[in-house]
Length: 215
Image (cartoon, rainbow, N blue to C red; front, side):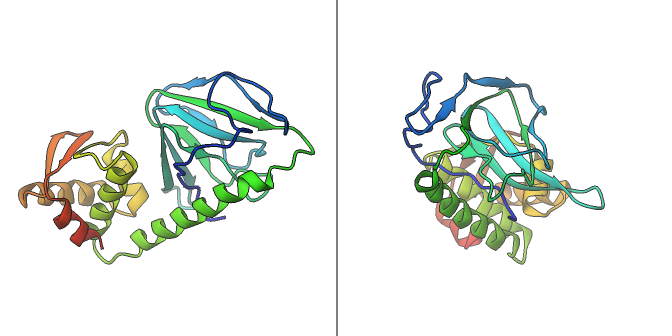
């Protein structure tokens, strides 16, 4: 399994969003767990016995490469689920980006959730393929433009985009250096495509131009 992915769907009844309860199928929703910025939610190599849902905040999924570099494979925001694995082991680390609340849904032994987990797996595969397409882009502007379009879409296509992650995070997600990411943001600003309100808030001024760059 090469990438953890973000999924924006309504969870079935076995993964309720409200107070902790046991479903007929045997899934138990625990109270919201709070994680401070940079704290670990689970580690690579740990047993995967649950599915996680972001209640607020943001989560990054990453792996440490053999040379010590970090490769981020996904970001997760409020309402999205993560932690689904094809086997019993986590293949990535999950870490809170900012102050984050996560609800854990543990599955009892012998519980058959295949009819619920299949849509998660298929949507996860689709987003993983999209991420690979972004990484395959030839230049940095195309990668950053595609990233901003994805962030805008996941936030309801609003004109202003909130980016809880740092420029380093974005670079580790897109396979770019922090200097390159910052330089591309500056170029997009100079061209009038975006407005930088702060390091974490961007306004898209010319969505069509951004889309043309990212396609």
